[in-house]
Length: 275
Image (tube, rainbow, N blue to C red; front, side):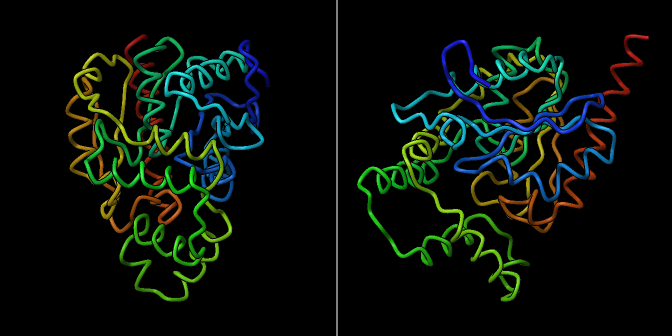
């Protein structure tokens, strides 16, 4: 689709069941990351599953001139309206959670329930420095050994149970090496992924929210998830054990089970409240 502002957005709409669930990816990730585990599980559970490539990730607009978090929020709002999917359930991870948090403030009427995985309300100093440094590497076109980059991403995003298994880690290293983190769109996303302190603002969120952390997440640790949940009125918090920042890929069965439970419970509660 093309938005009113001329921004090209790539999306996939799986099925016509109700209710709709929109998945939002993290920094540098394409929508295909949901295809192996989340799309089939949620379709089997009776949901209409929508995935999209955030601005900056082809075939969506590459955002070569840069963009803001408000731009990404507007993109998601435009897609929900285009598909007639409101009120929509939204599941975000990492930067996708940041987009969902801001969408809940800006356009609450479009949302039913929000699940925020690997989320926080403010980035730590080391997270900001790392994101800015990675963006600078892209800007300078600095070519580091791809094996080194894959290993660093593995250490940052996977849990110890995965990293201690050499066969499993080898598969992850191949995947991370092939995926890469490059281009002006990824650079813009990296600069956005370093959140300012938004905790006070999130006290104004009225949409039902559930925060899901991953036990060994170094990027958005459970303590940051609990802090975020405490700031959002009525939000819940749950920690999935045994996985890192990529928990939805590292331990998909446990994560999918928890997400489906949360969305179904919230739906039942809303139906009972309006009955």
